[in-house]
Image (tube, rainbow, N blue to C red; front, side, top):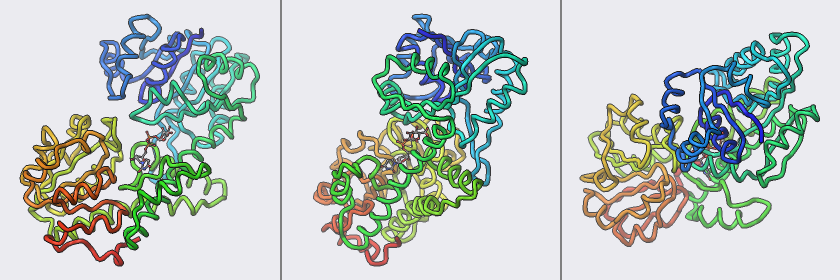
Length: 455
Ligand code: UGA
């Protein structure tokens, strides 16, 4: 088994470190945030991620997982040093690489013998070359090292599972010595290792995320056509997704993609391509469709309620997707923000994100309810912004009784439209066409004429 150090103990770094320890490696996770390391040393996990807390606790007690703020200690200890620090966006969409550059300098300053330096953060193509250049410049002359690109494909909410059972492991390097060590690290994983050059590995990550975002925007564009024509996007997604060449995954129409990866990575890939002289207009359209999703959805709510001022609206779901407490770039938060700006009184509930929401400005302008049912008390509309599975299991007869007017706006197509209309709701989803115009709808003369639904 190997000694591994991970620099950066965020979502990717911490989960990767815990999983490497779980399979038997000895791991040190480094972070310059002293409060975070103190928290981790005291056994508390700064993020909610299914299975992570248990894994961290077990591996800390077995002595295979340690935490420190000292980069020197981490680098000395390791055969392989992973970099997993943030690569945030700049205002023009390009990637801010200052943390990567800083860590490269820090590693160089303490490098005493051969190490493999692996970049796990999402970075623009050709960053590996810069990292190698930087280390060479700042390290003691003559010390050997290799740089590897090993992008991470884990999703928040199922990070542990994605890491333990990856579809593939991409290793970009021009060194056989480094490749052999990477094979050793990943030996216990049952997944193909795709060995490439560094540039290709870096590009794979941006190309993969952009393709997934493209799939989402594609189905959302199809959903708009469904709304206008009376077709059901859920059936269409099933019909096209069962073609093995297309696949059903990431064809869920909804409020669009959010989170800390897709919006940033698509903008970055556009900027990277432009920088290389290759405009990527297709991805600009992906962004535009995504931005239209929330606008069109808000319009549906306005068409139904006419004036939002003073209306009590319940919102279920605040995290950017289920099974996470992450509210960064959450479309649900943008939605709540828009409703509040329109003068609506929003009462919101989320199973895991309530604490994180309290750190946002918008929390002072809404009421947080302790349960989904309490959120709908006296509401004139219920909006589902995140598809937590438990929302589908709520007693909707009780929801119906508690609401003043039975309007449901399902921004994630979580509920069965027919069941909801049978229960007396007027149901509006995304691209679910005729299902929305159920008998109950007649009582509240509202839905926008389908032909006018903006695409
Ligand atoms: C995404 C990728 O899926 C990971 O492979 C990648 O490692 C990660 O970014 C990253 O670059 O770090 P993540 O952002 O955690 O993972 O979450 P996803 O499950 O991909 O969802 C992203 C957004 O797309 C969410 O807002 C989700 O609601 C939305 N989405 C997803 C849809 O609207 N429809 C879908 O069919 C799927």
